[in-house]
Image 1 (cartoon, helix red, strand yellow):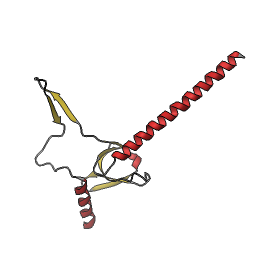
Image 2 (cartoon, helix red, strand yellow; image 1 turned 45 degrees about the vertical axis):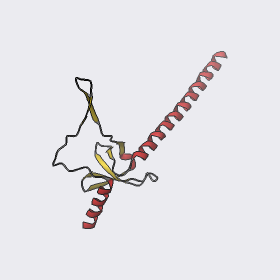
Image 3 (tube, one colour; image 1 turned 30 degrees about the vertical axis):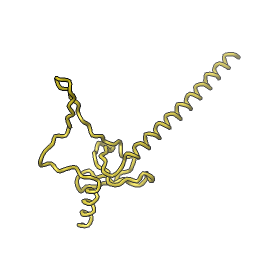
Image 4 (cartoon, helix red, strand yellow; image 1 turned 90 degrees about the vertical axis):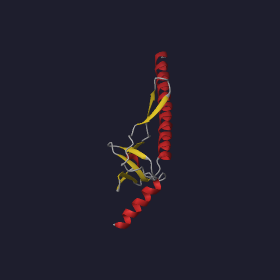
Length: 135
């Protein structure tokens, strides 16, 4: 009889642990989704599932079933499901220390004079509207 009580007690502790751990994980996932949704705005660079990089053109935070518009090349806009957006791509800078212990920040992307400039959100929208008018 005491062995059965011990086993039921152990089972109850395990069930409570699983329930608490599941709730904690659920809250963490919801917080991550809300953070991603708040950072997903037109003009931000994203990585999509499948390894495709693109720039958000349109995204509806409220209706996650509506497709997001992502520009993967100048003038090439695709519709993707909002869950296909894996993460926001943050610009990375390399930090190098000199011999005199001063910190130098080196931008990873080399600056090329003939390279096109990065468009702002407004410039992207105007270009897409011009392209739509031409068709």
